[in-house]
Image 1 (cartoon, one colour):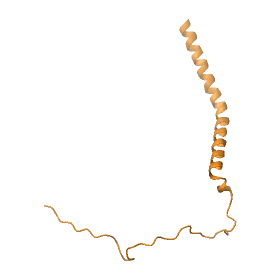
Image 2: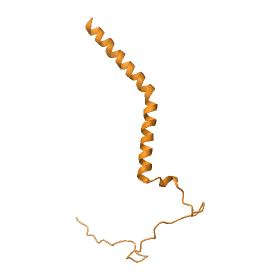
Image 3: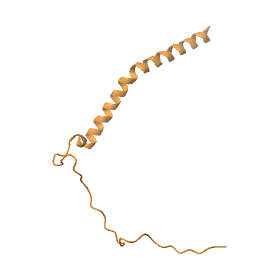
Image 4: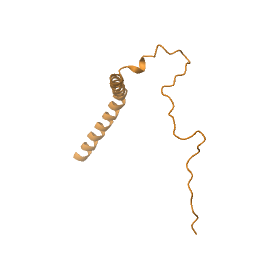
Length: 86
C-alpha cells in the first residue's frame, strides 16, 4: 500500500508542476525579456532608439575610407613556381 501511495503522490506532484509551469511560463519569459532589454539599454545607453537628425532619409553614408594598398591596381596575386614530382 505504501508503494502505491508514493507513486500516487509523485504523479500528483509531477502533474501539478507541469500545470503550474504552463501557467507561469509566459509571465516568467516576459519578465526575463524585460530584464535583458533593460540591461541592453543600460549597456548601449539608448543609442539604438535615437535616430541621427542630420541624416536625410535615403542618404548613403560611408563610415570609413578605403585602405590604400601597397600593390599596384593590376596585381592579381603572388606567383608560385612549383616542380612536378614523379
